Image 1 (cartoon, rainbow, N blue to C red):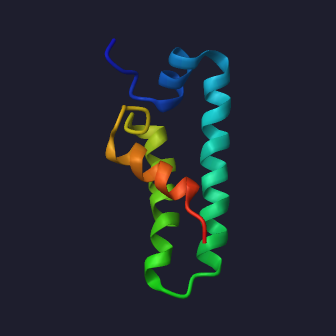
Image 2 (image 1 turned 90 degrees about the horizontal axis):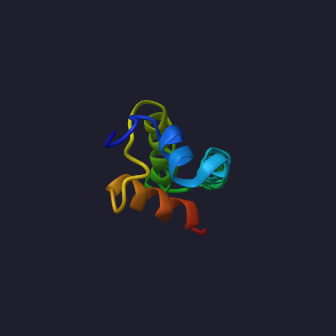
Length: 85
């Protein structure tokens, strides 16, 4: 099978039982950080990191885009997860 069409199954196969635990923790951390940033936003452009994280959370349940190496969603997730204001 090339891929499972589910990020949680792909992460479980790749990293064992710790993968499906760390994936939601990473998503939750990014969601909390970008939510805080959005609450203090003064410019419309500052809402985009939050919207990207929401889109990635939705996509993890229906597509397998996050764990592909060097996919645009993986790059965007890393960028918004480590962004500091």
